[in-house]
Length: 214
Image (cartoon, rainbow, N blue to C red):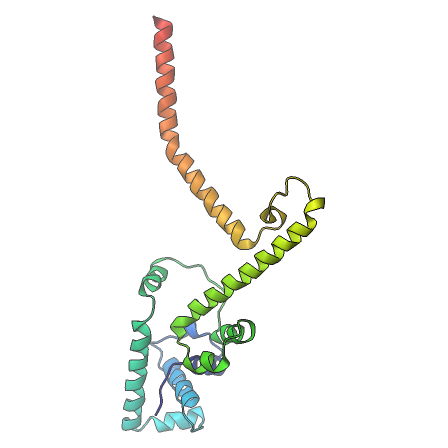
């Protein structure tokens, strides 16, 4: 029996449960059974219902085979996962975000990014999704920035002198975020320097007062 946690099986799980993959509760037997069912269904030629699967795993031999292979698959995924990022996310209080479905990401990688559908569905590891999505997003950004540059050059003769760069014409969200972070850094630096400024001012006032007294 072939047990592989590929994108195809994750999409099956999301369709079956109407849950995003990151909502899986690994302490919940129902979630785990449904995930294993979708893995078995996606990677083997036999077709059976969930109820038939539950009957199937009543066999201790079959249940142990599936469980052992599933645990090995999870360990392999954990082995190649980015533990530093994972730990950082756990430590920090993360704001509630909109659910992200693997099925939507897979569609973007195939339709928009042009990756081979067989590779995405059957071969790509879930650990690699962030790599391909980052490359795709960077490519989109480059295309948008290139398009903005040509628009800027076309409109340049009629633009106000204050609009002296494509960014001034139309800043993208990631550029605004970068500017906010830069402003925060500069403000923090100024705040750190304030005690020194006050000390210098106090020393100067004291020196002037002493001169007046002489």
